[in-house]
Image (cartoon, rainbow, N blue to C red; front, side, top):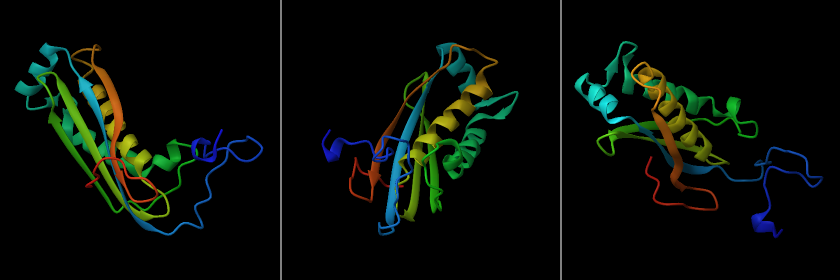
Length: 163
């Protein structure tokens, strides 16, 4: 395997290892990720009519709070993620289609490593929260795909991150 395609979280002996970022300069970094939630048509319609509220409460507001909490705790969930100071975290939740909700999570930091995992974690936990809030209406709700839309800062840029 050439150096560019080598796994970064494996040491010389092939054992799992956290990447040492101590020699890197702290720079502004941003990442944007999304996760989609697809509802059966009748459930989407019911949620719209109810103003995105269920017996458990305000679906979108609760999802944003849960996603934000997840962003801040990503390093506790993903073994080799570094704890990062989160400078900004923003969610955009909107209907992508009549039955698909799009949850975007944009995260900013100034640090030695990026926030892709934080953005992905925020978007997916927010989607899981939507599922939890709406599952009484149907268990046929489908999550995904979850994907990185953009990142800026560090060695590589993907898309146009504007957190």
